[in-house]
Image (cartoon, rainbow, N blue to C red; front, side, top):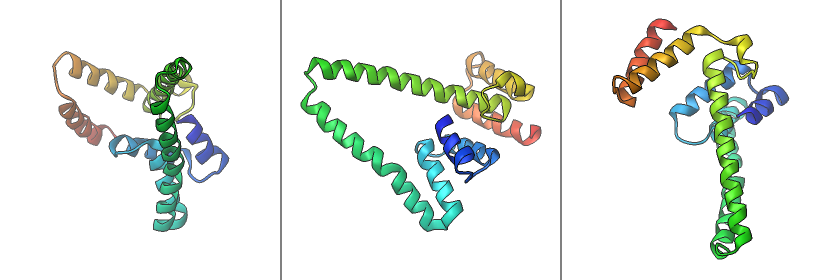
Length: 159
């Protein structure tokens, strides 16, 4: 997420921080990874529907081709000890990437920005809402859908 923000917001200037924040929020509600949703939105904003289609295709084709090549390689070499060791390292890297994305989402939720100086920008209301949601989810046994309904209604009144 920080790499995508750096490229789209800081380096290219295609979106401002608020627009990128909106993309992150929408990406949590729509299927597909943030990179694809970001590419689609930026393409739509810059070149309309054609830009959205081209950007979405360009944002996905590289990953698809690499995944297909790696799948074939791993399938034919799955018994090789070196390949198994490399795959274990990739799994650890995936955990790190997921942890980094989670930290970015928490930073965004609690401060309204992706600035890593969280303590300087922390907003109390999102933190309180998070804690209340966590308590409702864990203690009251409310389901995720019920929590989303409560959060949506609360958002109407609080924001």
